[in-house]
Image (cartoon, rainbow, N blue to C red):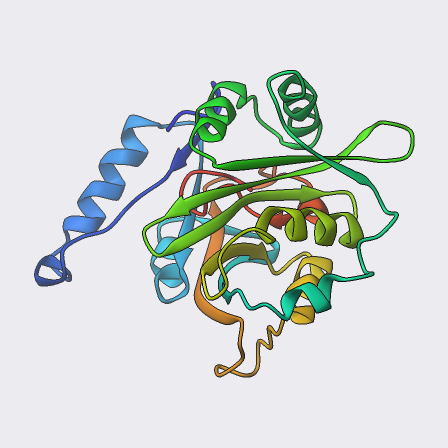
Length: 245
C-alpha cells in the first residue's frame, strides 16, 4: 500500500506451511523491494521472523517497537474498575457527521502521513465512534469499536493521557455484552497504555492473566529515521496490518 510518494506499507506477507523453506518468501520480498525501489517500506513482523528481515536490510526503530495484541474478556466487574478513574477528565460524545472533521484534524496532527481517505473508509466499518473534548472544547482523543469474527476490536484508541484513554475505553465497551472478547492492540513503547490494560488484569509475566497476550509483532523499516506516529498517544492501534499506528 502506498502511503505517499516516499513511503509504502507491506500490509501482508505469508506463505502456506507446506511451501515454507523453499525460497518463495525471499522471491516475493525481492520483487516487492524492486517494485518500490528507493522508497521506505514499513512492515510488522512476527518476532521469530525479525532476523530474516534484518538480513534483508530492514531495521528496528530505536528503541525497538513491539505491537502487542491483547484479548479482554469483558466482565461485569469492569465497571467497578473504571468507576471514578474517568470522572471529570473530559467530555466524551458520539462522533456524528458534524464531529468527524474534528476527528480527522486530530488524527492528522499526530500521524506522519496523509491518510484521510483511509481513515474515512475505516470509520465506515466501525459500529461505535467516540470523541473526547477537554474543558476548553479541544479534541483530546478518539476511539472506535469494530466487530470482528470473535467479538470486538478497539481500533483505534488515541488519547492525550491515560485518564482520557480510560474514559474513552469505558464508553466504547460499556454496552458490549458480558463475556464478549474485546481485542486491544497496544505499543509497548507506551507505558501508559500498558498501565490501562494492567488495571483491567493484564500481566505480561503471567500467561494465565484474565487479559491475555495473543500475539506480538515488531514494527520494522527499510530506511533509517523513518517517521512514526506519536506513540505516547496510542492506546490501541488502528490495525496491526495496515496502520503505522
